[in-house]
Amino acid sequence: MTDTQTEPDERFVTDEDNELTPEERLEQLDEETRLAADFVEGLLDILDLPGDIVEEVQEDQAVVRITEVGSGLLIGRRGATLDALQELVRSAVQRQTERRSHVRVDVEGYRARQVDKLREKARDAIAEVRETGEPVRLEPMDAYERKLMHDLVARTGGVTSLSEGNEPKRRVVIQPES
Amino acid sequence: MGADILTYIAKSLVDNPDEVKVTPVEEDGELVLELRVHPDDMGKVIGKRGRTAKAIRTMVKAAATREGTSATVEIVE
Image 1: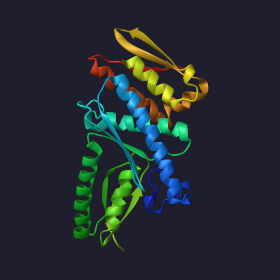
Image 2: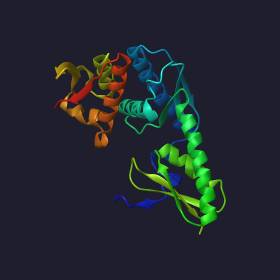
Image 3: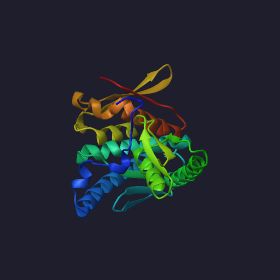
Image 4: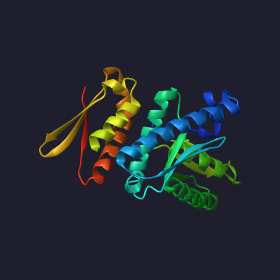
């Protein structure tokens, strides 16, 4: 892979997941979410932090929501500690399941607010692409956020999207429909 | 707390949790936490392009901040 590689990816995910039945997929997500919640619970214990942990599993996403922590400790500046927590949860879950983990972690709704902001920026970018006819590059995002952006673009007429660059700088490009 | 959290995280990431060893060392008045794991588990605590190691350091630093101290993590081979 080179830095300039451009390919539509997230909209055409063809990894092992697609071979599972929806029930099997849900079972896997349930398992991953439970493991993630266990890890987070142990972490809160050692940090001597309170917190409610809610596991949320839907057909296409699994989230462990941590609330009532009463501290920004797990979020950090610009979400840096939350990014670290996400990486640790992913690694801890993957070690046990030995497959890619899809569980997301959110603390006090930080991620949810972030996604709202990203959607807002994407809508602005779509308007710009329509007005100028020129492609617009969004900021680097993780795979989950990119998928949300592709979905948003797909629901909108007159524009298409693709991803370019390598992780963690991979970003969505919105362009006029040819 | 830094050492506890580091031990917990490392044990969660490796296949040989019994071989996780954390040693607190003072270096120039700074707390350094030396992390040793089974050689087969090095990749697990370092991760792709050091991503996991970076996450471990960030989390341990955050935990230390809670106590008003600082701590750095050194992964020892």
